[in-house]
Length: 608
Ligand SMILES: Cc1cc2nc3c(=O)[nH]c(=O)nc-3n(C[C@H](O)[C@H](O)[C@H](O)COP(=O)(O)OP(=O)(O)OC[C@H]3O[C@@H](n4cnc5c(N)ncnc54)[C@H](O)[C@@H]3O)c2cc1C
Image 1 (tube, rainbow, N blue to C red):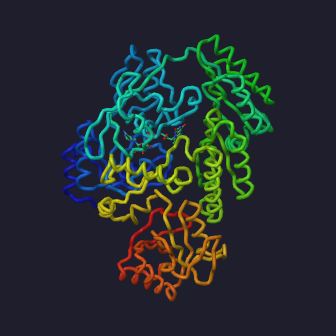
Image 2: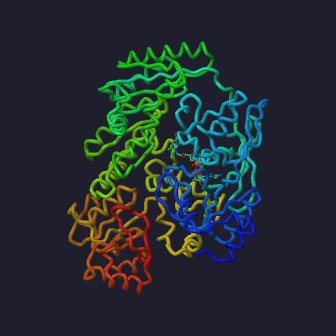
Image 3: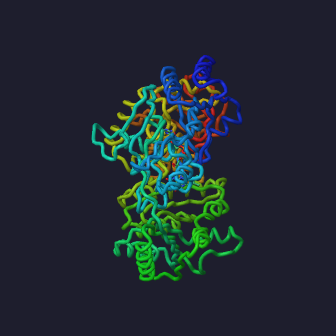
């Protein structure tokens, strides 16, 4: 529990009516679009920038983790309060302050729903292009913190292109203003752009100045179908060669179409045999739109389109987009678990990316429906598995790692839209060099010396103070180091070459999630290609965590070795946590927890 005096301090800042402590509120605010909840200790709803500042200052002074939440639609767990502490919901910051038609900009508070802001500026003939598919629920602050993209990013760019200036509160409580209302500004470091995409780890955005453009007066929507994904991708290349820039080029693959057909009870939304579908929109002045629409159709035909439809009315436009809207509910019916990645490659490498995905489907025997923003090379790769099937989950994680390695090898990135949060943190080093990670951590420290703002995301918080404060809660987090930042080193005690054994599955589960693994087993020279050691004492480098798969007879001595090596965090798997081992671990002043290493590395570890 947080100290009562701390809670009183927060109540005095925002008013007791705006602090929620009941289970229902904590549960509601404890998860985002990812659906991997962690409960905050309290939820607070500040109503002004000065209240935000006072809250930050208090959390900083008392080393309490502070998490900021916008619309709560994030897909990488950005707003999830991993270490408990305080969840700051920005929902009272919901006013559009000024639409400046002369200077083509809008000044807004962060928790205005994106779709509402768009509708308001469109009333005066202006246009805010960033359009994440979540725009009816996500808010401007969350979009800025994640640098949200969407279908229109191909022509109009992502959120970063539209942020001119910010008011923000640092984790220490200072209020800063970055940028300005002017479209040009080269004074000092570009802190505005540093905060864009910083995933709520550097500062709390309390106001934004956003650039607008005139609303395009006309648009045309075209849907093209192809008998292969390669032909659909080739149509995109044809468009580029024709120098046409549609506002959107959305791609849907055959596995997605099959899922939608099943979901709709057999009603196909595309001709039989379709394995690739493009939804394209061009916009601008009416005559230009007509010319561009012809060019788009010609490019699709040249690539072998099997059917071309152009919407004549708004209803028809709605119908052409229907397949895209039905996708999300349709995928939910395929399997209980969806590992949803948003990888991106340079546009020209898309055929290569689809080749890789095909290879992963075959090699790991997985269903992987894909769709995405083809104009940007940004593809949503959905690995669908039965979450109760340990083998399938294991294959999915191995495929995921290969996907990440594959996109980086193809000069792409592991995330084009959803950010790192805590889900992709263990994979950061696949893409970023140690130098870049180290520099980024120094930047984080300059903003947030005590590591209180959004700990557990992107980079490791080494602040034990934070863990200490969070540790006041009943569900003690294992350690801030396990909340998913960096590849950590895990000793798998009892690792085995036998793929049916848990000691083997756990080793692969950790490795596939980005951890460095060290098998400990005197009877094996190597396990899964990793050199095996008789004891942790023989391992040359440091080890962060040990996970146990041995009987008490062998385990007691090995626990002693952990203590000698200075490893304090020990995971026992449910069912393998014999009382003798746990008692011994406690006597050695280790920190034993029960945590299943195979199905959910790091998920809900529970202290004894
Ligand atoms: C159905 C669906 C479709 C989606 N489609 C897209 C898409 O097309 N493109 C896309 O890019 N994403 C998409 N997403 C992901 C998600 O909607 C975006 O990442 C969005 O920008 C998150 O906004 P939010 O308001 O929900 O933020 P939250 O989930 O509340 O928070 C996201 C991050 O922003 C931080 N944050 C929130 N408010 C502030 C603030 N005021 N100051 C500082 N930090 C803050 C949080 O701490 C967290 O780290 C989709 C999600 C869903 C569920």
